[in-house]
Structures are given as C-alpha cells and as structure tokens.
Amino acid sequence: MRGFGALEWLALAVVWMACTFGGGAALAWLYKRLHPSLAFYKLWAMWSAVLAGAATLLLAFGGI
Image: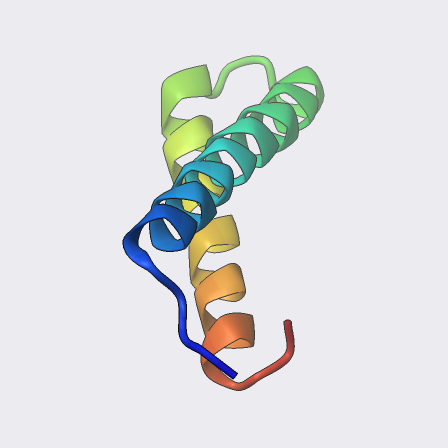
C-alpha cells in the first residue's frame, strides 16, 4: 500500500477546508437565528474552529 502523494494531500486539504468553512457558516446561520444580537462572523469563526478541531481529533485517533 502506498502513501498519499502531493495531489491527494492537496485534494484532502481543499475538501477539509470547504467542509469546515461551509459547516461553520451553516451552524453560524442557525445559531444567529436563535440569538440575533450575536455577530455572524464571530459565530462562523467559532463554529469553524470547533469543526476543524473535531475533524482533526477524529483523523488523529483513526476515527475516519
């Protein structure tokens, strides 16, 4: 079994970032509907960090 090449790592990084930022935006939008006084960009940053951290931990511990 061979390891990942540069193109595979690039594809993984692009998908990872798209899912993290897209999921963070979706969760921020839903949370903003519950609490309209909160800033969307701060919610987006927080949820993106949470999703990225969770995905990193899953990948690190072999859950994916």
